[in-house]
Length: 118
Image 1 (cartoon, rainbow, N blue to C red):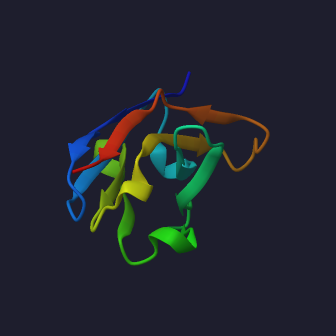
Image 2: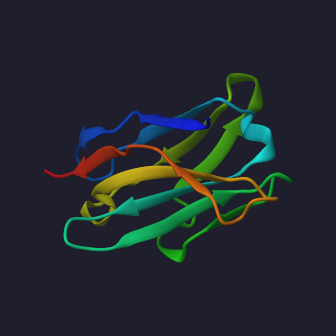
């Protein structure tokens, strides 16, 4: 059974940096399409960035140039490096995994809170 555990969230000031981690257990992260989503207070869950099985990456427009998604297959872990953070980045961040041959099943982590505030 695939399990995802996020870590690395916290409270920081505008302009700060943070790195989130998402560790997979129960399978190999290298065969999954991985992604980060976030949910701000009072809003729906929003896609942030993706890391495909082939190594391709994609980002939502609002984070382009500030957030970087990466994956370490040896550690079975995905990362989200977050720079130049603003209050608009405040949200619970979730990682997800989809096996390409079973696109109807999405695995989710429990989320990690990121709060950007003075």
